[in-house]
Amino acid sequence: MLLVRDLFVDIEGSPVLRGISFEVNAGECVCLVGRNGAGKTTSFRTIMGFRKAKAGIIELDGKRIAGLRPDRIAQLGVGFAPEESEVFGDLTVGENIAMPTWTCPNGGNVAARIAEAYRVFPNLERYRTRGGHALSGGERKMVSIARALALGPKLLLLDEPTEGLSPVVVPSIIDGLMAIRSLGHAVFIAESNIHHVPEFADRLYVIERGEIIFTGKPAQATRDPIVTRVVGGTGMDTPTAN
Image (cartoon, rainbow, N blue to C red; front, side, top):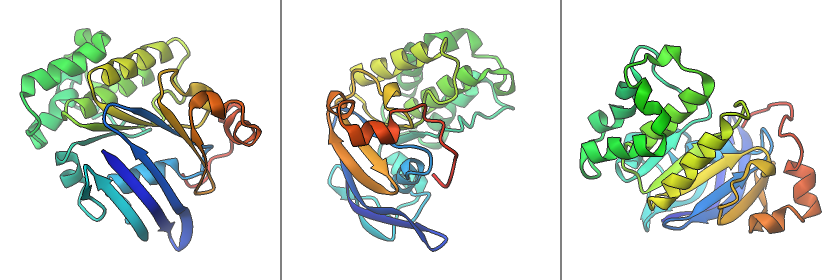
């Protein structure tokens, strides 16, 4: 599925990623955990083609995708829901979710892909005609993930899917992530706090200052003193370049 090896990325001449490596296999849920500024978002945006790698390999199903345009990477089967939950306010919920089927019609039956997105987040069904500008933060997050799912992806990149949300909303997001995985999609999640990692995650990578400092099972990470010192707190470190 996804293979990243020895990835280096500089931003404005400063090194942000320093030779990181990780992989996500078909059907897996994998988490990349690190405090703000560690390099999580840069990793995801580089995979999606929004950032250019200085060096390293990025492969999807054995095909090198580093250097491809974001739209081409999406067509190859990678969906991306950014932390900002960038929902289009002038479009309805239904139009926001359907948008990938307009711009990227590949990936099977269009109606089936949209229906799958609503099965994952059934609460959105009653908001189909509501404008994006009228949604709460949790609802925008659901729409953002559902829209990426409507692409019909092999792999979903979800950047901070629970960050900043009300504790009342978080269980609905976690249930949606579990449903996505049960449907056979691979899921790669970035989180700031190790305690936000879903219990069903297969593997966890911890990133600190652009380097991977831990790889293993989530239960192992919570017993590692270095990991808990880095990402075992509140996740509310002072933001830097992420």
